[in-house]
Length: 410
Image 1 (tube, rainbow, N blue to C red):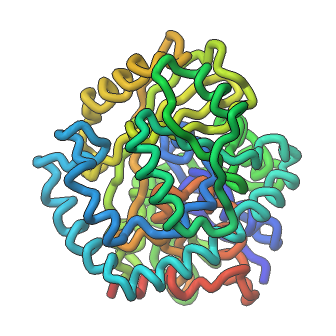
Image 2: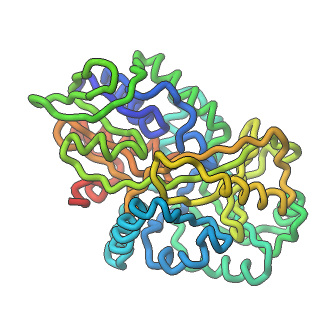
Image 3: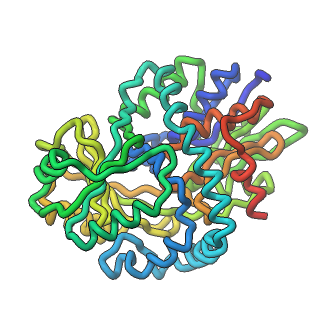
């Protein structure tokens, strides 16, 4: 089928959906506010996390909550003033963590993650920037012998899908030790995972390819997507409605209200993440991402910046950032003696998260959707775009989309 399409959202998922539809002959318009570089798509750790096949909606996650709370020094924040948002979400997550539902979610997520890297390779080859994807694994390090022993035992029990892990070699340990003045008691290297080497360049490449293929941008805020007489209509805050053969909601944490207009229920929460970044100093340009697991922090060297990211804060999208979260990350950076040099800039963004920690990908009539990718938005963006485009054109996606339909929340 050919025809026109409107994609609501210009994050990494929305751009990939738009490009995938263009490759199938669609004329595509993207509707989004004119602030393309502040969302979670561009503030993440750049990690292509194919090893995370076990949904975070699990009994193991639930049991770990007390030790991870921000008030106890951890990275999990449950602000009391946002209890009306996170308590209902937590109760739904508890139900999703039941062993049977967890097993089904893991099977679905495993199948999807297995397609992630090949999809990114195709997309970046099409944009002419295959260099933006580096499949070089990542490190996980521990600062005490006890945490190293417990951490490696946990990894030994964990399914890592298409990735694998091994103990870091003596040479790797020595190189990791040059990054920090805190002694490293143990480390492992994940193999098969990867990273985007420059998030800003990725955004530029995707947007340039979209425009070069005839795509257009409408800088406005969508109020909803509905079906009218077999076609889609996107309602805007300022401009006139836009009609198309299909509308795709891919607006991240703002998506729940947009699909509600089409009669779809999406119990999204804004799972907010924080980072600080600055000049990389002498941090090696070829160093893969490093997870300091005792501090729940990942440090990634991009082309021109070094980024330290942490914090899982369940809140509302309209809440102001909490400066204590940035202070905590800066404290970790200082304690480790990392090569993060001024000017150091703070960032906060909202990951769109559903209670079972699976994305929402599917359609109802002329309204389709792709959002809710939580920590895996960057990882799964390319394969999500390809899969939804296949679904909309009557072809079989690379993985079964049934578990990702929003009907699971009826």
